[in-house]
Amino acid sequence: MTPNRVLLVGPVGVLGGAERVLLDAVRALRHERPGMALKVVAMTPGPLLEEARAAGAEAELIEMPAELAELGDSAGGLGLGPARQLARLVTVPGVLRFQQALGRSLASFAPDIIHSNGLKTHVLACMLAPRHVPIAWHLHDFVSQRPIMRRGLAAVGGRVSLVLAISQAVADDVSAALGPLPLHVLHNAVDCERYSPAAGDGGWLDGRAGMPPAPDGTLRIGLVATYARWKGHEVFLRAAARVLAVAPRLPVRFYVVGGPIYRTLDSQYARGELVALARALGLEQRVGFVDFLPDTVPVYRALDVAVHASTSPEPFGLTIVEAMASGRPVVVSHAGGARELVRPGETALAVMPGDARGLSEQLLRLAGDPGLRAALGQAARAEALARFSRSSWGPRLLAAYAQAAR
Image 1 (tube, rainbow, N blue to C red):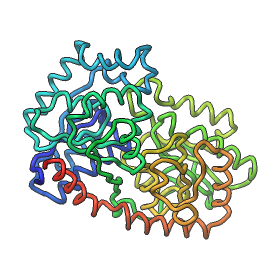
Image 2: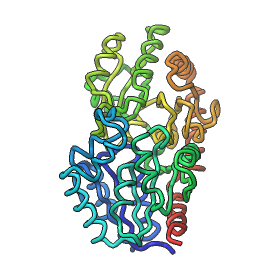
Image 3: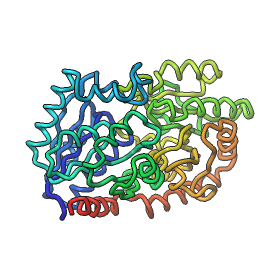
């Protein structure tokens, strides 16, 4: 049975990759079922709520207290073991008040299904939702790498009705970590009408980075990512330094686009750390830092080459598909879910995670071969249209919901 009322709940209101996927779900559901009642709940302020309203959903902020925001595997344990961290979910007074407010919101909307979009909300939804309401976990993470949250998910996993895994790699991982679950692989999608090939404005990107306009003919290479420590910013900067060491006269600029968006302790770089590294590598005049942008379409159009540099296996790699849909050649850190997105040498170039030398070699190859850049960009666009277009994503999401409701 297709639900008529869907509540989508996520831990943050900023627009990282998982949050952009949640907005894609809202837009796809609104397109497929115009009369469906949709509501988005976020637990920190940010543009997600405004974007959700613009997409046709109700939206509500139920702010997460610091005690809960700081909980997580990336927090270095806060000096606490898994059991004591998880106890904060149910024992800290501020968290209890938050849970009560969230529980009231879940009940008052009376959803036919709850679509949870983050590890913390997976646990909270299972704890607080009315027993008769199916719960879908949209899983964007490798659970095996998150010992604290894995323990929380295992404790409530019997309550979940559907697990939407964003890649086969994520599905295999959660099965190994938690045992049998009602799994459904649903690769992320992008709006291939918005993310599409078009002439870009490199001067606009220079301005956002606080740099003077680059000379005509300058190649622009960029990493678009949150400041999570595993997203490969150091690898990217070290590869940039190697490119310039090999070809110091090459007309090229590098861009780091993004910022710290989560509140979990010690999980992200501060911008100052990356600026200091760029300075230490002698890149001050060649690297620009652009703050997080909710709309990345003009970023990809301004770039000549996009880089995905994650040092750990990527659960999916939304920036890869966004760049592909934009017709840009991509160099991909070839592990995890990212391996499912590209065909090395045909739709992208690939390097091993953490390999700054290998990344620099691929960037030099692209810099010296405009024909290769054009061919990869064209093949990437065709692949994105065939496999990752949002037009086919909504029906697949609704079919998965119907499976959960049985």
